[in-house]
Amino acid sequence: MPPMSQLDLSHHFLIAMPSMADSVFAKSLTYICEHNEQGALGIIVNRPTNLTLGELFEQIKIPLNQPEMKNQPVHFGGPVQTDRGFVLHDPVGNWQSTLSINDKVGLTTSRDILQAVGEGQEPHNLLVSLGYAGWAQGQLEHELSQNAWLSVMASEHILFDLPAEERLPAAMALLGVDYASLSEDAGHA
Image (cartoon, rainbow, N blue to C red; front, side, top):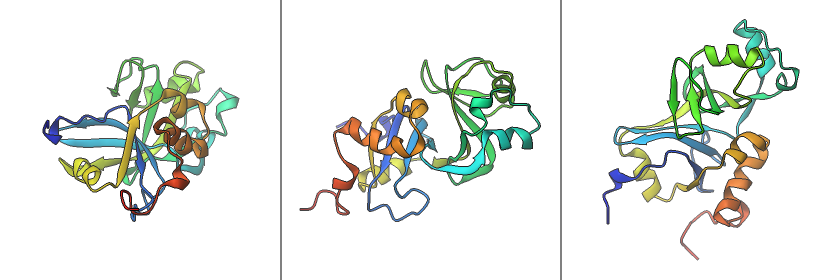
């Protein structure tokens, strides 16, 4: 069996098992942006906040000239750096501070991407969050071994085309599982 350190869940969804006691992650769907020997970084993609993109753009003093985007929610991306914006987007593009997750999806933290969006330029597929979820070295692997999460290869369609409340059931459907059918004690009859 290959060592757990070989596991790379970048561009995967993590689905919190019903037994997840941590209220931050209960019933969450997290998109893993980076996973390596140092740890993992993800964005919770099914926790919209009351803050809209229109309000966020006003706060950071960038005009948003795309009326159809003004009411899109900003998401709670996780408990780390909740005062910082993280933009998941497709296509990757060329921004000042972007982590390329794969050849399609990037995670950008620099202001230039929001200025481009405000002007009606690419990327049109985006999810803006405040904060992220982070795991220390070996922590995610340990949580997976404790059956805290299910994982499945991510889909851009689920990330960018579906409303927040449909993302978790759609990710479960990729596994062929209905969330309601999961028991609190996975693996026990």
